Image 1 (cartoon, one colour):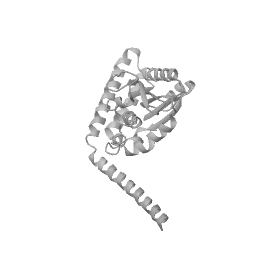
Image 2 (cartoon, rainbow, N blue to C red):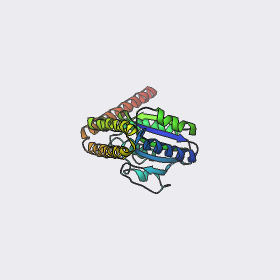
Image 3 (cartoon, rainbow, N blue to C red):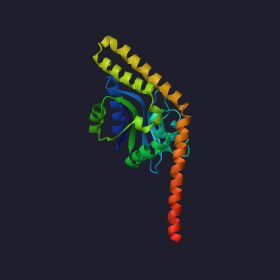
Image 4 (cartoon, rainbow, N blue to C red):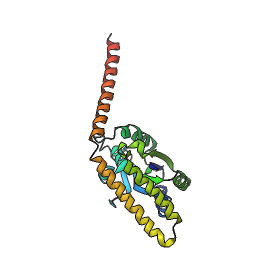
Length: 237
């Protein structure tokens, strides 16, 4: 199962430690990390990033505005980065992220207080045990969201097949002899790259979905306007 996971902390050192724990879990084959970024909420509600680890190997200087990561990080982590930074607010509907912005972003925003440090990560995991048991002792507040529910472009057979294959390869990695582990690890990295490319391709083929979501959003706004007009009429009559 592939999840969007948000781990928030009141202490920056603990967040960095938790990030290292996630890397250790991936190293031993318990999870697979597709994207990961560490952010901090400032006094004015703005976000800055402290660390980033992307699927294409991009690295950026820490401490800069979160919006500078938009376009660098993909998938649900990239969407969440864009929404939290405010850069995608105006383009949210056009970008096909309506449901995501209405649900996930609100929950994450409510969870983070000024000064909090959070890890945003897209992770393939067999269950919640490995991540939760590793970060809970560090005082993590854990939010988990299935990417199939967060991002319609992931509702794709090929992406799901890559996820399934990655999970199977992790099982083989754990059972493999030491001399075979590097080969299995390489297969996992190749599958992660194919998955990333498939998701990128899906973004270019989602016009019908975007039209449907735009229509849905327009209908919602028109319903809100109609309700406001009714309330206004009641006050005037």
